[in-house]
Length: 99
Image 1 (tube, rainbow, N blue to C red):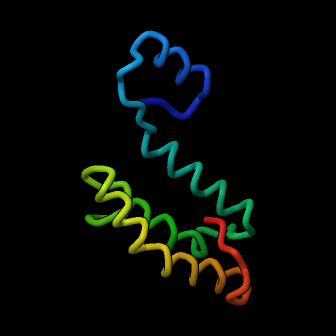
Image 2: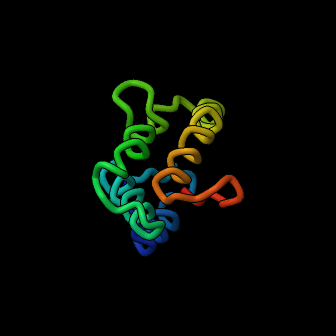
């Protein structure tokens, strides 16, 4: 598990090529918040819907059991998160959501 540092990923991949690479949840959350800030979604209140959907208390995207479950959770969340992104940014349906 790493913070996403490319040098660490490469080093681990060289020594353990079959190992699964995982991101630390806290660093992943930080990456999500940074992405939201670059989109103009800056306050904690504005970001809360997105972060709660990713982390969740019981059913967050990060709680997926496997790739199939992850895909299901992502697809189930997309419409709600796209609607929230458009609403926070004041965009219409023509806007292509980026989160």
